Amino acid sequence: MITLKGTNIHLRALEPEDLEFVYNLENDESIWHVSNTQTPYSKFLIRQYLENAHQDIFEAKQLRLAICKNDTSEAIGLIDLFDFDPVNSRAGIGILIQNETNRGNGIGKEALSLLINYSFTQLQLHQLYANIGVDNEPSLNLFATFGFQKIGIKKDWIFHNNSYHDEAIYQLINHQQLK
Image (cartoon, rainbow, N blue to C red; front, side):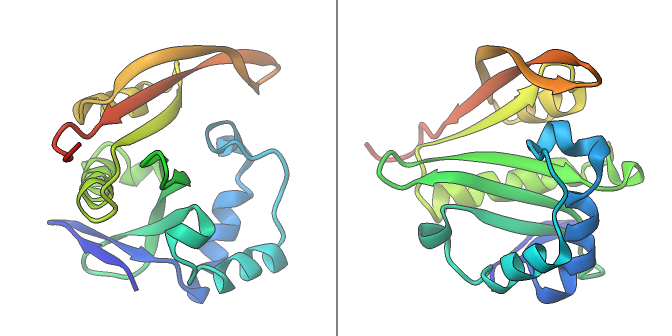
């Protein structure tokens, strides 16, 4: 089991006990526009996903971890590496904290720091990228904190609230990696 521990939070592999949490998060229509979800997920499908969560990132091309406060194993958010490409040494990265009361207090920052460090030191990735809605100021600021740079805008990329919205792509290059 992967566990990455920080000062206040830790990241851990998903467990079967996370079924309700993942189900509720994946079916929360208010966040579908940030997670590229377009249809509801059944508990059956999420249960199957959790049963296959033992696959490593090289098999699944994805690593999804639960974000937990250090005093509990209860998930409060998810952080992902997706579109893992070992040939080109890159992956996308995304984060979502479920409850607004857990946002804006450093949890996301610590989780992102742990996963960036893991990606560059353990996975030896050369780069990470993030797709962020241009109006999502908290996420834009969070990723900028770690040196992610905007490399482009995808015009009218997200359809949300009966209108199209732009999405920015941000990139972080691991300049410390041996070439």
